[in-house]
Image (cartoon, rainbow, N blue to C red):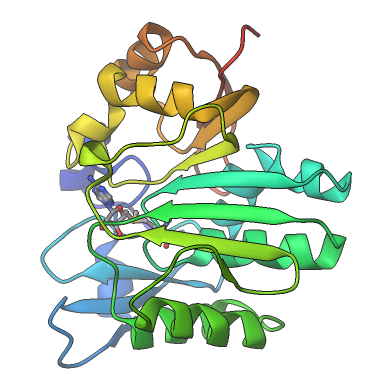
Length: 263
Ligand SMILES: C[S@@+](CC[C@H](N)C(=O)[O-])C[C@H]1O[C@@H](n2cnc3c(N)ncnc32)[C@H](O)[C@@H]1O
C-alpha cells in the first residue's frame, strides 16, 4: 500500500484526493513529456491508468487511487449520467475543468455504447498540450481511437463550438476562466465539478460560483465531485443545493453528489 506523505496529510483540504506519493516518483512512474511549456508529465495511478501532474504542483489531475476509476465512479456514475444514457435519455453535461478530457472521453464512449445523445460543454482556462492529452487518453482506453483523434482535431482547431466527437456526442470547449464566463441557465442534466482543490482554487468552491452552477442545472440536475470539504458543503447549501455523501472509490472514503432541486 502506498503511503501518502505526512506533509500532505497536514492540510487535507489541499490534497484530499490528489496527493502524489513519493514512492510513485521514486518508482519512476512519471513519464516525462519533455519540453512541454506546461511542464506536465504522465503519472501512473493505482488502478493502472494515468493522470497528469505539473512538476511544481503537488496536485494531480485525478485521484492517485485511480484516474479511470475516479472518472467512472465519481463523475459518470454519481452524476446519474451513466444511468441516463443507459435509459436512452439525451443528456447534457457541463464540466468545470476539462483538463485531459478523460472524464469527457469516458462519457462520450458511454453515449456511443448506449446509442444515446450527449451534449458536453467543457471549460478550461489552460488545457494541457494536445499531444499529451492524446497520449494519456490512448493509454487509458482501448476502444476510443476515433474519439481521441476527433478530440485532438477539435482541440487543435480554432473553433470548438458543438463539434461532433462520435455519432452521438457533440462537444463545446470554452477556453476561459469559468468564473468570468456566462453560463446558460436551466440547461444541464449534470455538472462535473473537477477543478483543483478548494485550497488551490477556492473561488470555484464558494457559494457565489455554486449559485451559477445551480442556475445552469435543470431542476432535477446533479452536481458530482470528489470534495467533501466542510466549507464546500456549507457553500452548496447556501447556493440552494441538497447534497449527500456517497462512498468514494478506491481508498477515498466519501465523495459528494448534490441535487439542484429539493431532495
Ligand atoms: C483537476 S484538472 C481537471 C481534470 C479533468 N477533469 C480531466 O478529466 O482530466 C483541473 C482543471 O481545471 C482547470 N481550471 C482551474 N481553474 C479554472 C477556472 N477558473 N476556469 C476554467 N478552468 C479552470 C485547470 O486548468 C485544470 O485543467
